Image (cartoon, rainbow, N blue to C red; front, side, top):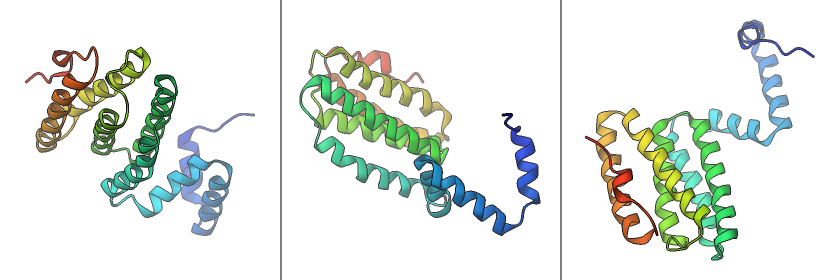
Amino acid sequence: MRVEKLTDIKKELRLLNSEALTEICLRLSKYKKENKELLSYLLYNVDNPLGYAEEVKSSLLINFQNLNRTPYTSTKELRKITRLLAKHAKYTGSKEVELELLLWFCANFLEYSDPYSYHKPLLTLFNRQMEKIKRILPKLHEDLQFDYGTHYQNMIDAAHGKVRYFNKFEFELKD
C-alpha cells in the first residue's frame, strides 16, 4: 500500500466539504488515543496553551506524589512522566509550554524523588531534562528568556545542594 504525500493530502482535504472533514476527524479520533487527545487540544485549548500546561501539571502531580522511593521503580515512573510531558508539549508546539513543563518536572523531581541517590539512571534523567531546558531557553523571546532564566538559575542552585554529582557549572547559562 502506498501512502500519499502530505501535499496531496492537503489538496484533497481542501476539496472536501465541512461535513466530510468532520467525519474524517471523528474517524481518526477513534483509532488512537493520541489522535483524540490532539484533536481535543486543537478544539478546546489551542487559544490558551499555558492553561493547558496547567491542566497537564495538575493531572501529573498525582504521579509525583505517589512516586515510589526505590530508585529503580521511581526511575521508571519518572520516565513515564517525561514521556507524557513531551507528548503534551508536542501537541502545543510551543517552546514556552515545553519549558514550563520541564521546569515543573525538575522542581517536582527535587521535591518528591530521592535526588541524593546513587542510582545513575535517576540522576541522568534529571540531567537530561536540565540540558533540554538549557537548549530551549535561548530560542524564546528576550523577556521570556529573562523570566524563565531566573527560574532556571534558581533550579540550578537548588539542584546543586540536593542532587548527587550535579555539576552546577555545566548547566549555567552563558551570557
